[in-house]
Image (tube, one colour):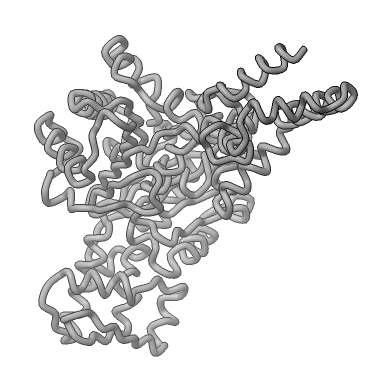
Amino acid sequence: MSRLLRRVWGSVVARSPSASLYNDAAAEWQPGQGGPFDRLSPDIIYSIFKLLPAHDLVAASLVCKAWFSIISSSDALWHDLLVTKAGSAWPLVLFAETSLRALPPFITCEDGLHSFQHIYGARQQLPCSVIIDGGSGYCKYGWSNFDRPSGRFPTFLAYGNIENPMYNSLMDFFTTIYERLAAKPSLQPVVISTPICHYDETEVATAARRNLRHVTHKVLFSMGVKAICAVDQAVLALIAAKQTSGIVVNIGFQLTSVVPIRHGKIMRNAGVEVIGQGALQLTAHLCELMQQNGISFDNITIVKALKERLCYVAQDYDAELSRNTEATCILNNQGEFKLSHERFMACEIMFQPYLGGLRTMSLQQAVALCIEHCVQITDDVDIPWFNTIVLAGGSSSLPGLGERLKKELRKMLPHQISQNLTVISPTNGAELAWSGAKLLSNVSCFEETWCIKKKEFIKHGQKILDAKACS
């Protein structure tokens, strides 16, 4: 009996921490981890057991078995550990592990959280990922364990139109990012946001999207990247808002796109609406208004900063014209600037484009048209997957935008549709897609289900890209 006990104890203390089912919780009891049993050698503990009478040894055995049973079979215990570790981020973790695990074609289980213990262990072993959100105006990049991007640079100036990718241009693009991050491509997966481009469902547009995905993966794998997850910017923005179905209104640098998404997949058969204005036009219109009112400035960067700090969307444009809306802003090394009606007049072109000399649909018209198309292709109108609207892009953070859009849509849509609409306005729309990529990269099944490995790409080529495409 004593020899058997010694052998069992020896197997316990020799067990590798990586083979443990307990991860952090059990690591306190593992050799070399600074736990309380590390202060005692196995011989001492064996000597203590040797002094115990038989009935106490039986009791100790039963207690150990009970502990093991609770730890290995009680999901409530692992649920509490997950909640404690996640802290205030627990709602995001719960959304990720229930909703993102079940998105087609990435379904890994039917009921989402099938085992808190399994998920806890898998999340502990996730590697840190590189995130690259190459927007039409600026590229944001960083690490998945950071709350915000590490840096950004203007893609529209340095790399031109990414809708027409060339191998060498993309190679320079990604090499620059890895150099700035001081990261080695082969050590971690990468999450990249694919641009919202080629909006229709024609053969030419479909071929262009497939070519973009293929060239992007070819470039990154040639750099030695271990695994790639490429997801559309609109899908990532929706994920960041803790949704898997809805309509994303992305106010980009030069264009605004209205993208319907159902279960993580862009519904191009419903139609992606495009408006010929974006952040650039808002800044240009504010510039014109300031010049008309004799407000001097040195460069367009100042106007952009004033737009971000002072501008807002009026709930009632005509009523706002009769109010005192004067506000002051002090910019470092540029002095003090005072704006009045320019603050909301610059943003009004989103809802009344003709005020800025633009010939395009208004924002509410494009969203209403998208919703009408979604209604037409939806079999069960009692489940309106399109009733959540998520605003994305830097200009989506303008105060009052979400409320005004909802107000205008209620005027245009039938009551049974408009009464249940929800408009989500982000606090930082410019980084919404990046935040969605961060949330996705921390799902417990991320690498095995969302990523494409180099061996898969070499073996299956375009087939594996099409199988895991979200757009």
